[in-house]
Length: 210
Picture 1: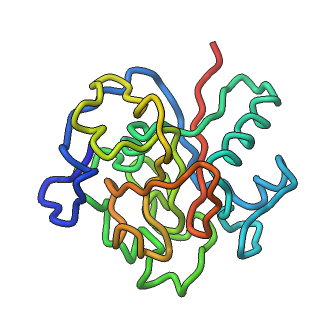
Picture 2: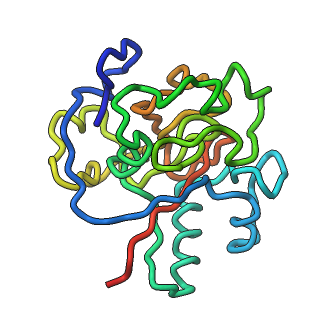
């Protein structure tokens, strides 16, 4: 986890690269949560660009929590939540140790090819696990509080981020590609959990209810 070998673009917050062990099974959404899915659960689409197949944007970390809570109310045998930062990076890398799992133009909507807007989910090539848009399109909220030096002292097994903080973490980069430059799988972005941004959405993780 963290700065990929040979990646000269890394920020200090992506270092040091370190080993992480995830001990519990989980699944991660194949796509970012779409506007159609968000509307069906919350009836409160906050996106700036309308389109049922577009990923929902303009949702805060708090909004994402409410969405997961609403789905959990359906009691379908799973618990839905945001992934931890470690789970997200494991799934996004899909066994690839490089900073990008393919040429950006083929796998991501980013500054150079997005036309200044989000795009429907699943239009670019997926990663090795079959997940789409883990790079580009929208930054993705994860569960963790942000700590600039957390990687230097995080536990090896199932790290969950600092116990408290002011900012939450989002991962993966966006169509705008300004914050933290061109998207890389180790890129981190911090925002207050109440912030609703045009470049941030989310995807859900889930695990079987015991």
